[in-house]
Length: 130
Image: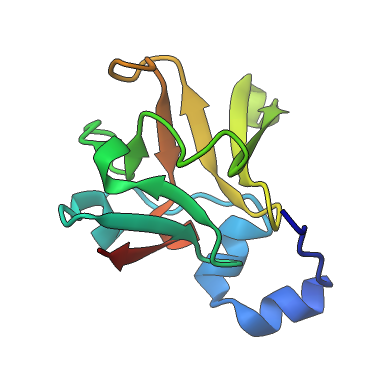
């Protein structure tokens, strides 16, 4: 996969202010505000920054947290995980492997078969119906 590298000015010009805040500044959208949280159609969730396919609807589940949640990414190469020690917590941040955009965090309290909960910001994702 070819990595995408852009200047902060290029990202700001291409992304909405909310997308920029989340994807490039590691922000978090308010819970229960994304229409993707309740999306039920069959399809693929792509990175809103670069279009890379990240998750499928078959891996999506209702976590009750207010953010779109998945038990696994579309492939092990689609996302990268990084230690996040912000806000006096220790969490695992999830980023798009292609553009480095912040997507959310992964927690070990999801459903089987993986036991993982990829808790993603809806603004960091674009949905494409099959």
